[in-house]
Structures are given as C-alpha cells and as structure tokens.
Image (cartoon, rainbow, N blue to C red):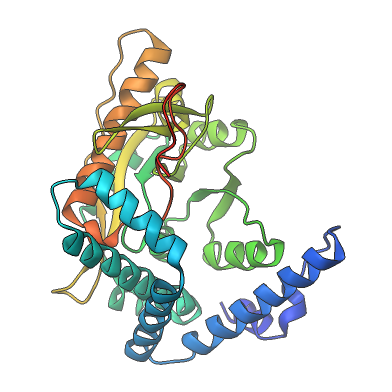
Length: 325
C-alpha cells in the first residue's frame, strides 16, 4: 500500500504510457487526465463526509450541465417505467447522479482504506453464499451490473483477502485507463479485457478462481443476444452463460447497494443461480442470459435511483426495428 501511495503522488507523468496517437488526441487525453487526477486527489484528501459531499456536488453539476445524459436517462426511464410520471422519473434520475457522486467519493478514498477500516464503507451481506460457491472449486462468476457502488465490490472483496479478475473494456483515454486499472488492482485484483480472448476467462474458471462481470450494458451480435430487460428486447452479453455452462462455474449474483440506514454499502451475495441445461447449448445460453438479466432487473426495480440510466442500454435493436434513441 505504501509503495502504491508513494508512486501515485510522484507526479502526473508516471501514469502516461507510451502510446502512438495523433498529437491533438494525445494532448486532449493528457488534459482530460490532468483534470481527473486533480479532482481525484483533491476529493481523496478530504474526510469521508466532505469527500462524499464534494462527489455528490460534482455529480449534480454534471446533471445540470449535460443535457444529452439527461435526455438518455429520461428516455430509458420512460421505457422501463411507463407507468410513472415524468416528475417521478426525474426524481429517480437525480438520485442516480447522487449515487454516482457518492461512489466517486469512495473511489478517490481507495488509498486510505485498509483491512481495519474498510467496513466503515462496505459490509458483507450473505457472505456464506459466496463461501459455498467458492468451495465447489469450479470457479465463481460474479453476476453484477452498474448498480450502487459497483466499483467497491471487487475492491472491498480483495481487501478482505479475496482477489478476483475484473472483466473490463479499456477506456478510450489511455492515461485514465492506466489510472483506473491501478485503482482496481490495488489489493491483488487482476483485469481481463472484455474484448479479448475467452481463454483467460476459461483458464480462471479451470483454476477455481473468481471473475466479476458487469453484464447490463448494450452489446452487438454475436457477443450479445436479445433478451427482455424491462419488457423491451435488449442486446445482452451471452458470454457469462456460455462459460458457466461449459465450466460448471457457480454464478453468484453480487451487488453493492447503498444502505441509507447503515450509511454505508452492503456487498450482497445471493445464492448461486441454478442453470438451465437441456442439452442444447446455444438455446441454454440464451435462456440463462435471460434469467441473469431478470435478476439484474429485479435489483434495479428495488433500487431504481442507484442504476446507470444514462447508458443507452437499448441502443442495438433487432433487425427491422427502429432506433429507440
């Protein structure tokens, strides 16, 4: 930890990888990184209550200034909750930005958290379900989504002595990507490229390891298949189901939810999902993907103001259907 902290404050240039990019793009990425670095270090230097207030204030500023994000969020909420009034949808959307700001603050505080104090921010809920799944020795796939404090899930779990692989798509800004990976792998986690070869994922399951997968983002065929999400077909990653069927790994729904009573996050592990197996691998993959997506939907319905509504979840449409955005 001390080694990481000393490196992180050595200066901005230590996060700049060698990359061959056009000069204008290179400068823009450096500027974006510099602004993000200053914000992260400033918020991270504050006591936790002030850091949380600063993160939420910043998120509200984005909400007020970023018209396109608000438009996408309101469109998604209209698709998901047609029965709700516009006023109710706006309330949920504002809640989402509050949730994002709260999570931002916690991420900036990662270097301050230790095994002794991490429970101030995150506590376990249903840990026995994880232990039971891990004890099978066939690997564990965390089924999760962009809900609550998703960045805290792998971080807190690794800090408690349970490092895992995090499946992620590289960020467009190579400098921010490098910084993000360092925060995510601070306590032994490793990253797997979402668009990379599935061999590493299969190898992790064969070794009885753990992989966290966010599977609530828009995909395109053939990596994605259409299953219902809030009664609207959504192109959804099918890889988790295929790997689970092939390796018999346990699929454990895992979500980190903000608890307003505790004033901290609950890292919730549900019992492993029982897979549908009919012998038709491709049909079973689609069926199980639909089942996984329904689990995510149920959590979003319970905590609607903690999900990432500003992502164009229904962007990819079945052939012949008109665009929804």
